[in-house]
Length: 278
Image (cartoon, rainbow, N blue to C red):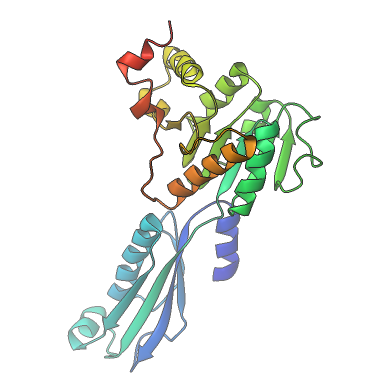
């Protein structure tokens, strides 16, 4: 199996992997400079950099870089003791660079109104693949969203089954009404998405969250919701709202410290704020 073809396949499927490459060699080693090993997110591998405990340590490092997103540089000295333990009488040195390979982040924008138009443009500029979903063909079409990677004009429940959601997926709920927001939110909190956000006032958010809670949706699932969505920058126009939301998405993607807050900390788990909804 070709490593690069497999790498492209994994990225297309929205899966993480890590690529280990021997970048420097001194003396005799059980492989060669530029040898590569690809470690998938499930721990399986393609290729080899020589086997033995060196490969095992590189495998552990690959799992770490997939988790942290930070590459590692490893150095191994194949002295007599190490060589004897592995049956490889080499005695050389090798340096291995292990880099994370992440799929492009995907923004699923539910709703094709005026805010979604700005969201789609800003998210695309920030490096997100964008998918726009609405049940109205007059809104969800290529004329309105030329930058989108995909546009769906169909019932939301129908589209859910056609979407692949991973921990590189960002879900933004901006439909035309409370009922549709609730339909999408009910599904979104069951997915492994990295980010789930919904537009609306505090009162609206509390109302929808309480409705799902009464349906039996677990609290830990609802805690993942970021709402009202976006960083608090005083945004008012669709363009400003789009900037605040995409900034929040970037903060999540880069694991950067930020002031963004989840509803679980600021709204519906706060008993005093729950009294806003009678």
